[in-house]
Image (tube, rainbow, N blue to C red; front, side, top):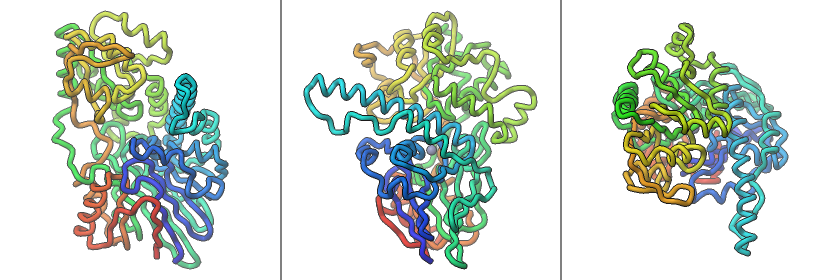
Length: 469
Ligand SMILES: [Zn+2]
């Protein structure tokens, strides 16, 4: 068999997912993500190892930036091949890529101005990595795949998408490669979600077989801490805010987490576990992503469908207000009485959340509520760690509000869930590649899988190429 696989991203790192499979003189790329890890961001600017015009198809597992974020750069550099993804992934990816291109354009303009003022040249060129026009072009190349339905994507290549339970539309992809009279299957896990999260169905467990597996390992070294009841934790925070006459400000990611919050808050309101409360979603991106959720009820799990059939949409309730314009956003601060504001960015590094923090964190009756991971060095992390004052828009502001955190929200399977996913394969793969994890995590998880399964398992190095026989 003459099949080769290149690991061109998320190899001994978490972001920048990018793999290429070659056979029959065809080249298929799986994901083309943006490098978000600070130490690896240079790679975003490096030329693609395989030029865009030489690709015969692109497969996209899901719409997170570290999986789709460099597709506009492919488009800019002459991609002609189709991009296969589910329609929900396509809808969300367009929003994510557009937002990212806008930031690229703004950053480049800002850099240009600053460098001119300082009379120097920066590390990166003063042009955007890609523009909104490039991101726009990507939509025209998309071809939508339906879950569990094989689609022929190139000469000797067939791809089937399966739900991975990670975010709306997210998939694991089974790629069947036929060379002459022989075939091999390669299973790309994508990002594997968790069981029993709101809205989404559980991740697909592959009980059949695959000749090769490329598997993520984000949480390959740890379990999620015992979460407790999310409803309970959320109700406690909101009820205290009502008792004290304060607001609840929630920094949140636009994709999935914001919609999960709407789901939980909608249930608490309906069950009267919290008093009637206005909930504002103040993030243009979250508002647009929520519209995508509303268009895809076919992807909801049984519980959510049951709720929908009773007339309760998972991302809608009477006191939910979507704030689209700047004027609507500003008006929120003049409302009296307890309100809840969900705004981005999730780690308080930018976006409208900064205005809400400024307006609310100085008063002890308010609560800043964290529902996601806060990376080292972010404003969110500083507040979570309990600093007395933080710098916001160039000035110091005291933090006197309650700071609370809800555990239990996560889009990624923990270590034992990952192990369960891979060991469910009945016929053993010839080889397993562990990717999408920090270097040490990926290597250790690969060893653990090898011990458990008794098949060769490795964490491939960046830009390494492997023959699949
Ligand atoms: Zn993801």
